Image (tube, rainbow, N blue to C red; front, side):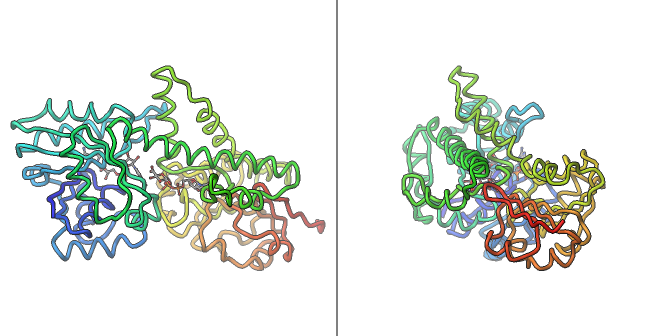
Length: 440
Ligand SMILES: NC(=O)C1=CN([C@@H]2O[C@H](COP(=O)(O)OP(=O)(O)OC[C@H]3O[C@@H](n4cnc5c(N)ncnc54)[C@H](O)[C@@H]3O)[C@@H](O)[C@H]2O)C=CC1
Ligand SMILES: O=C(O)[C@H]1O[C@H](OP(=O)(O)OP(=O)(O)OC[C@H]2O[C@@H](n3ccc(=O)[nH]c3=O)[C@H](O)[C@@H]2O)[C@H](O)[C@@H](O)[C@@H]1O
């Protein structure tokens, strides 16, 4: 058992803390957000993540997990400290390292042990761990020897607990063998391949992995657009491609592009680093460009179908950036809703979990419904923007019943074409032939 302190108990920090406690370590989670710390102390996660609340409560009960917003309490006896604060982008797209810098300063000011290992789990540009070490050392009050370890996080929101216990690999980047060995030992119960490398390579592994996954998505989206032009079906194409193990089936789902708090910011940050060192990443540049364009495919189809969208009643199904989360950071659905408002359409949106988060961004610009039925009743068209199971399982018959002349623009290919064709619907999806009835 090790004593571990987590600095920054957001999405990654809480999952890290809870899962490290679950494998038997004593964990103190620290955050500057007192409101969220109070919630977590009661066993309530501030955000939705399947299975997280159960593990949180369980480890609070055993006493292996503690929460505090007092930095002294969190760090005075700390020997192993995980940094999991946010690394968002500024308005201009540059990476914002303010939280990292603040965290480093706090660590420096409060650690007292002779030796500490600081493990960076936040996604930080290549070279940042060196900077963190310098900042910690600059702020030290006691004589403390600091070793850095880069241990990037690969979990997906909505599957974070599963991903932690079924990880494909754990990356440990360190320039000190002893520190690497301690972090390896901490992670051994997760029972997966451990990649031990240097700090700079670990930092690169994280960005390159996200950039590659983003590349798969933009690639398949471009092929999907081509499939539409030539009359092929992207689902058949992706399946046929993915069976080649060198290609693989995951992450070949065509749609309205990748959103979220990570892919957009991480692809941008990698590109920025490449520009900084004058080593252009032309593929990644295109990946970002294609992704920015892809979010407009549904609106484009709707305009072609209706001529214009002014005064049209439009239902949006799905606001979270992906299913099983209430996170709307970087959500393409939000961009689409905003664009439709600009087109002077009347928008009503539904999401099983993300309505409250969306209200903080879009406020009264759109209406909010409490069910799919309420959202689609008497609308001119429906935009499907998140592939929630609730949407996938929603009976197509209800579109017929609740809309006068149902037209669906499905940005996540939620319904099989064979099923859709049995109903009296106009149905446009991504990379698959449109189904347009001739009744109008
Ligand atoms: N969200 C995800 O699924 C994944 C995120 N990451 C990376 O992990 C990092 C964290 O991401 P999230 O957990 O999503 O961020 P988040 O925004 O949910 O949480 C960050 C937390 O840090 C706290 N914080 C900020 N400054 C602090 C300070 N000086 N001291 C203590 N706490 C402080 C905030 O109050 C907040 O609770 C980012 O670098 C992200 O790119 C990596 C893999 C997955
Ligand atoms: O660095 C991070 O923060 C994380 O970023 C992603 O995880 P996440 O953003 O939670 O979600 P994903 O499941 O990767 O989906 C991202 C976006 O891509 C879209 N997507 C995903 C897969 C696909 O085939 N097609 C597609 O359009 C999703 O709809 C979503 O908008 C990575 O999958 C994680 O491995 C990584 O740890």
